[in-house]
Length: 221
Image (cartoon, rainbow, N blue to C red; front, top):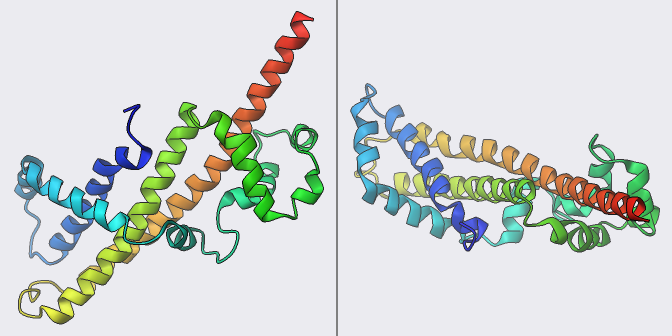
């Protein structure tokens, strides 16, 4: 998986999350749950490919900035990197005093949210981006962020289809479409938590590596 981007690695999990929502809608509109449906879906590789292609396409419909805005519910300085100092101060893994010593102009930077994001990305994230814990948290953030936005788009598509394709959609109750916005809410919350965790994890690992390097220099001198 080393040569694949995190977003590409998320293709199958994203397709599965969308498929589970479609299955939930189907079940809500069925008189009874047929366990054989799970087996048939499992065996239908073409269905997974189709859902995966649809989910992948939908994940690119909205621009990244708007997706981040939907997750963090902010119009300016949206990303948690814009507040990495405040988040780091609340994280028990990070020694705030050491962080203050590492970051030049700490107090001034804490008021400059745009500067915080640039500094975090350059000094904390990039040096440890390939660390497993950082990469896995970043992957989770991208997955849940895309799942939230795809779910919202699915909700819109469902409502439009119900309104425009009245006869074809007669078997589906409009209320069953609530599965999509509810899932989107859950995914957005998960994405927000993962995004904030990504920021503080990058800081914590970077600080730990710097402390280890300093100890090695001290021991060798």
